[in-house]
Image (cartoon, rainbow, N blue to C red; front, side):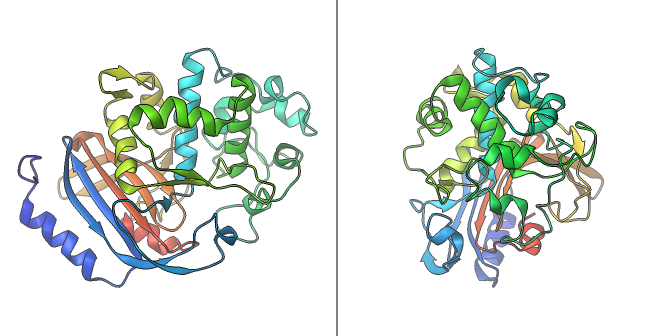
Length: 333
């Protein structure tokens, strides 16, 4: 119950009630604190599933506890967890390793020689790449759906900045991380996710959407149930421990949710503060009267969010269907 979790039950019920009555296209809201599921709301709304005609077709869906939902770029945060697990086992290159050492056949080999794994994780590759602020169908990320060689497409382009200096959101960086991870392990990153992360977490219902050529989309293809999204939040709050097992290295969790880069973006925070970026996780601070509370979040297009608030030992999960809308990100914040 809310009281067992140290929350004001009336205040929480008022917030959930307001969301249930409003007209926004929010599909689910779940709140977990101190291990207690204290709020769970599902609604009916319009949705565009990436696996069905690549998110073009809109359908009305009645959402519930067992309904899978696109999590879009939350997929990136999951890839980061997989990478940290693999690196700990010696199955993935270290942070300072140049990309060229893992992907020697690239056309953009000069770029790959100066871009490190760390730069992929922090979205600071320096590559000239247009994504945030460019429409779904005109962004460089969208072209990843059909390019025959995605890695050549990502790296064979000019450098706009020195790698490691400037944040620039780039789904291609996550493609590179997933390819490096898969090559080192000699198995698909989807299989790695299934065996090494989802199964230990008890996540049994999930999907990973593919592109025009049948390749899984590392930057946005994952579909999960909201309750399973909460498990990922709890894993972060537990610094990688699950059922008395260190699933993800604690140091990797700490590094993932600390600010490595300022993003220059403000619409993710809800109150105008600038968001930061860790290892494929967003970071920020919520300012309350007389108090500042730090948070980290896995954020996906359309209003998908896993927000963890370590100071409160709390996770908030939101799913929604306003794809391509910056406003929904401010709403769910």
